[in-house]
Amino acid sequence: MTVAKQMTRCPFCKEPITAGAIICRHCHSDLTTYQKPGKNFYSKYDTFRHGFLTGILFTLVLLILAYFQFFTTK
Image 1 (cartoon, rainbow, N blue to C red):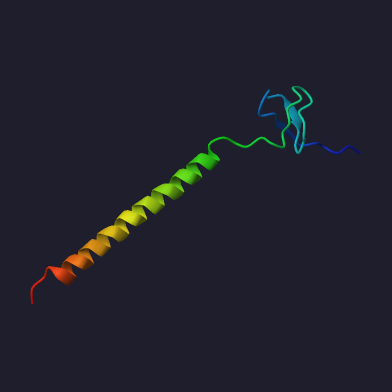
Image 2 (cartoon, rainbow, N blue to C red):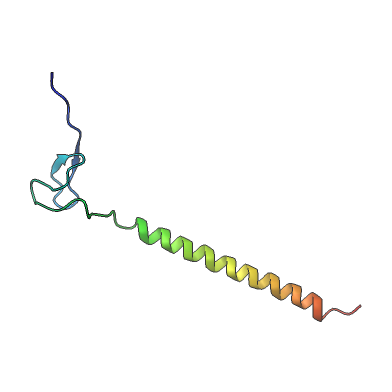
């Protein structure tokens, strides 16, 4: 009885390799240090954008409250 090996492609040379391999047997690239491009950049960008927009919203709320506190007449 044989065990079917799951195969994947090397991100550098695109040759089929065994899933979970540490070094590609075709191009000898180290697969442990490989990170998928784009994922980290967009997650950092989204975090910055949400924080920036939250800061602007908070500043606007403070300005509105200060206006009603100091510039409205009774």
